[in-house]
Length: 197
Length: 380
Image (tube, rainbow over all chains, first blue to last red; front, side):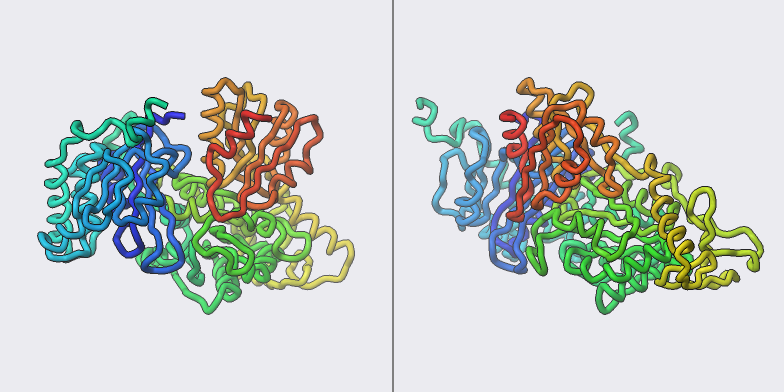
């Protein structure tokens, strides 16, 4: 069943990569600042670091019933394990975005590969903010949030003293995403022969 | 949505909205012990309460927390604790004390997988019957369930109001999904919120009978320290508060604390209905599962099935009247729960019509999905 009124984003990676923080900032940008309806959920294990980490944001112009993702419009995978585990319910016309340095095996050619962690390390100087580089790309490529709102949300939620670093990371991600031509990608995440079946 | 300027949305977690609701309702005392997935409530109140002149205490365990909550309320302050299953087990003893001493208070139980330490980070609805019957003896209790961040605010206010009005502990059941979901919500302004405070005695202190019956069945409540002599005991007591062995007094007292709740059924038993007017098949759900159910009902309608949702906000006293009405209207009731049928059993108990009851029970630590419910709606 299609849920046209919902836009669903799944952020995934491993514990400690800032997956949930990125999702919270996205939700705050779209919900708190852009005034849309949002639901942000996550699943995590009892451990503080390691293990799979998944966070979802549902964005809609009307009130949201089921709070979790039903079929994902945009999947961010920050490592290979997450890409393998969470690709299965991406919509055929959904978009896969991966950390190009950490995900080598892509399940579809309808994907965008940007080395978020490498950019965080080399451009910003801290691997820690890879999540915010990725958020910049997700924010831009999803088209679901005003970029100004995203930045305001980020500034209101990161620890004092780290605002510049985080906001530089966000902008680095946005700039990288601007180089991507989504129209040049295949229309579906399914292999071409899938259409003929 | 008419006036977007005034309706500024904020992104809040369910647990954060419970804090906002409690403070709006006038809660100024919290005692608790941290536990996933309820810890955010303590964490936030430890900051907010001192700012408002209230008191936050982290106690040595949940037994002591509940004792402190009862004590603070007897001293006149609206009080609350918040915990999850393992801690909810520990509060039961002093919860009974709150019931027999008719002490208003709110206990939040954010349900996670059980029994015992169970599944700390996964949702469950396994504490429903415990909320009703966890403490011993025939006791009155009110149990409410929240399903969204907006609910977490408004139902928490309601929980405090009912506890004050009926002098009873109120259990607020949340679950891991509701607790940790963040949603953009518009919180009502203070002047839009109706707050009920316990009725205090206006007779001269020497005339005061702390447990005397009246037309509401709810005695006026003096606070410790404001001049009214007031004996408080966990023993069954007479209208002055002293222990009694007189069968007539015992019977009168115990029947009064039950009937004060049944006198308020109309106000206490809250349900929400969605698309029930012409429904032929309906879902009875509560907590986060009600949201999956709403989605399933909408999807079923798109497929031409006349489905509806009866969402239980009040779980106990069981809203028999509403449930019965729709059991008579519909041919099938689907009861999805993240337990092995704790409310489904209640539905079966009150069913006196030909309505078929289909239970859907999931105990793998995952939220029930809309598809699982839809499958029942399309096949029965």
